[in-house]
Image 1 (cartoon, rainbow, N blue to C red):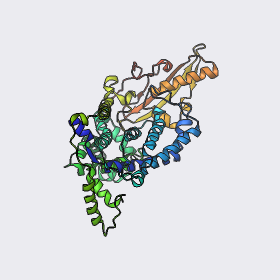
Image 2: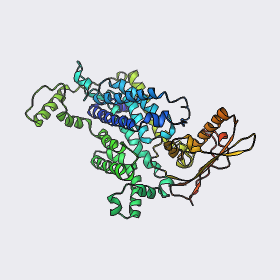
Image 3: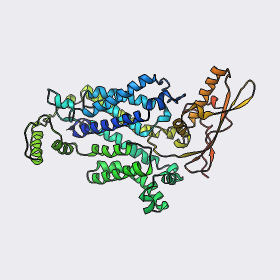
Length: 472
């Protein structure tokens, strides 16, 4: 019965409904940003080669016309989500479209976009449009403004994931024992922090403060006594990230600030918001806000559904059992999946193995110091230089540096293309690429003597072709 009471007890819908508006507004902005950068062409239809996720090679870019139509549909869907009209259909379309746009090419991967996709997915199953929406305003039936508690809890869980696992990732030597933080500070926007604090002190503050913040913030937010402190820290931390330390994380810091509403008491949030947001049931004219607030409080008590004590058999209907199982599986999966690198590699950032979908944010910096590719014709033994960068976009190449496997995929693409166009069958393709990883000594990212066309792209295969990271 504990699981039933935890997941299915009725709570005020106000927080989830208002979060729907927050999510919708941010996604409207994101879709406008995609228009501004011409996302459908620059990142989907434009590149010559894409780098699919394992098992998702079937995802291909449609014609530019279809892509723009999907993009426009996502923009409209985000508006409908915000205003709460045709909400569930809009959320399904948005989730499918956004996931397609995000996961068609792994060089586009971003932890923040992954979070958006997860939130969109779980919100499909919520009645988040029962309040503060066009549906609630024009519905002929009066809606009960309560929902099962899991609706709010699962959103809290998703918001907590980047923080907690971001902290776990920062316990690795790539964060603690390299010059990564110093590089971040040097690349940061000019700010008063540089004048107020010596660089060494600032480096230690960010290094260890980042670990402490990420590992503790969720517990501060869910504890009533420390909730206010947690919210203040989220605002400060997110503002610092979004305006000082990083210039490439977009709306995410501000989205996380707004998402702290999920950790507030829904009934208190509802009482506060109902003072400012008109409700369908309230046709009375009030002299002031205080009178309106008192009236709404009485109405809430009157309209609040009675708690009916049911038998265990009635409580655990088949639908609720299925939902509970799905929620448990979803939560357990997302708690275990980020740790898969333990079985696959000793350094996710360096090898690129299991670094995605694990909330390992801002854990690496690579500075390319040398890059060349060569092709050898097996029949003639003639060797030629290859301009590998000419096959990919600038954005793709930047993110290829984070994952050695992308160079394997590129080599196989080039090999197949040369066979089709020039009749060069099964050429040998090698690359000499050196980088400075997190400020460590210059070193080869891939063994330069290997034929990349013969390497297995699977993360589960032998990865000895990736040299061990040298730390001195």
